[in-house]
Length: 208
Image 1: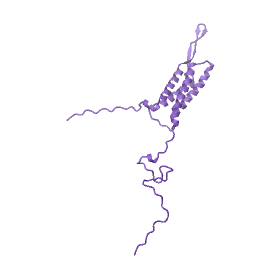
Image 2: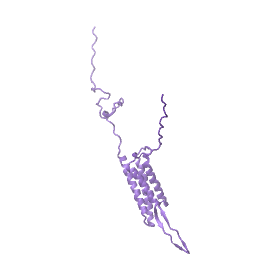
Image 3: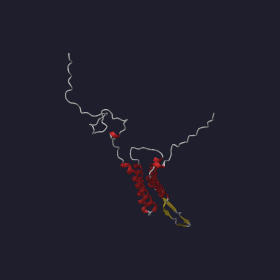
Image 4: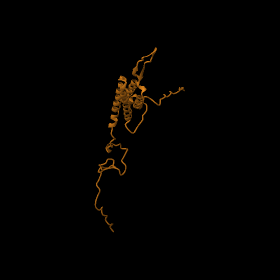
């Protein structure tokens, strides 16, 4: 008689598991571009030095970054949402009835539009290198998103399968030919014979 110990404890599986193999290089590049866009908004766009007010008073110097603008803040939210949507297949399989990369293209395009509009309004104050980098980064994200959606748009509808390559356990239904244009082919197996025309064979009367 041998004593058996307790069985191995089953490994606990997390409901959400990051699978890097389900992402393409373009998906990762979109996420990197979104992170760079947030960095471009975080750095100072303009610096204002303090000046002497007189009587021993001096104004403090300060800097302004891109997040002081409402349009740029909305653009940052949109581009982060685009990156999250691009990385979502690594966590969950979300199926949509359209090419899923079109969502990334739309969000990135809105981010680029808002960034350009806000950057052009800053010319009254002066040129800002951080604003130019934000515009270029958002444009790069749009380009990457378009490259991601092109393979999905090129996929056409599935063609019907030829009856010769269909699995044998799926016969065609009665009255419906499996392949249009081949009505002269046998439908249920056996050799095809043309229909006979004319009167059928006469029956001989019985002999008395």
